[in-house]
Amino acid sequence: LFTNMSFEAVQIFGGMPFLMMIFFSTTFSPGAGLNGLKNLRYLFARFYLWCMVPGYGELMEGCPENNNMLYLILASLTVPILFVCYKGAKAVYNKAKGAQAMTSRRESMKTYEFAELQLELFGQKALRNLKHIGSVANLEKLAGSLHSNSEMAAEIDADEEKKSDCSV
Image 1: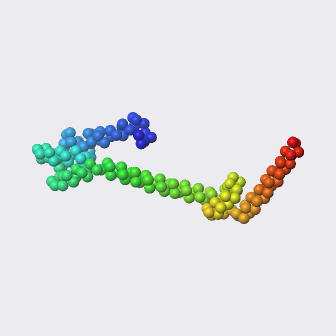
Image 2: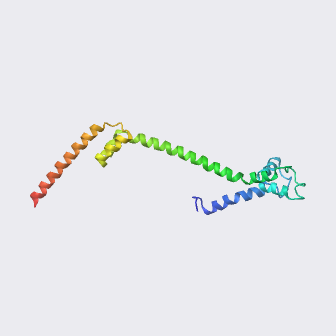
Image 3: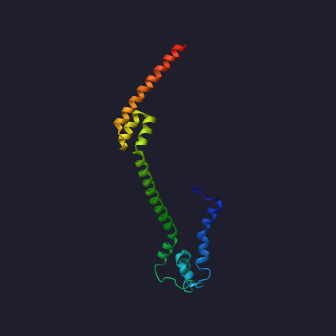
């Protein structure tokens, strides 16, 4: 729904926590596994849940003596906390990237070429906007060229009207 990933990728990504719990928690064979993998069982809430079950807690090695419920809650919140941290870091990165793009865009808007283009497209309204953004272009010179261009346009329009009057 809210991702660009394919359906298969979403299914694989969604099944990873369950598969990791099965393969790395060692709750299906407590005390088994390699030393490095054996320590990963403390990351899964299932381990602490089995430690709380009467009769099994004494058989499992590495169960905490007290604060078992606290460890259970913390272990179950590990993935959501990591997800929120990832989303926060990504938001900060995107905001910094957007600010950098906006800064470069504003710098390109201050050039003389941009001022000429804006003046040609939008006329008198562009002069106010160019003053507002702090353009480095000589705005008085551009305003003079705007008035001369508008005078030339008025002359061309007058000539066209005379030609159309003569042809009628």
